[in-house]
Length: 129
Image 1 (cartoon, rainbow, N blue to C red):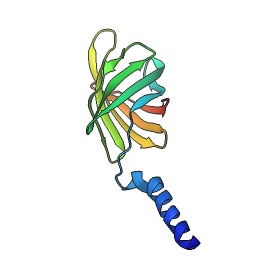
Image 2 (spheres, one colour):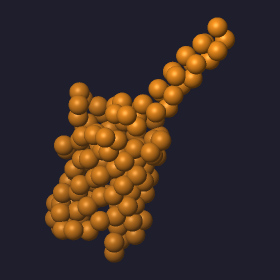
Image 3 (cartoon, rainbow, N blue to C red):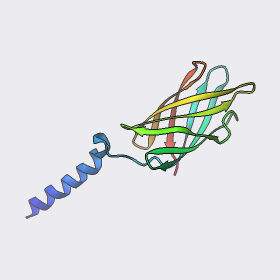
Image 4 (cartoon, rainbow, N blue to C red):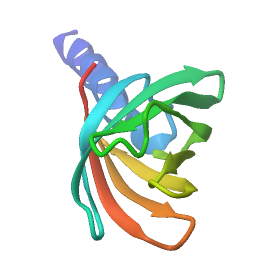
């Protein structure tokens, strides 16, 4: 009987631990913060606030340089462990679309951003709440 209980508990623990690897959806709702490097500008602190709405994500993006001031997240999707979304920044003279591609890795979202004019940068965000 002890062996049967142990095997049951082990199965449940493995299901929770390995669930995300087999398509179980994670909820990314909350605040994520981290940094990136902007070419010709330097380090930039980024805050991403996510809210799950059915199968999509909405939210806002802000940064310490003021290019994204609670910019609305658009086309937020979380598929196969990867969040993709877009938002608009103002770089001082033009509005520009930025695309995010971030993979969930524990309590981190790790990936990159790409601007409409081809600039890219790495981005790592840690869940704050």
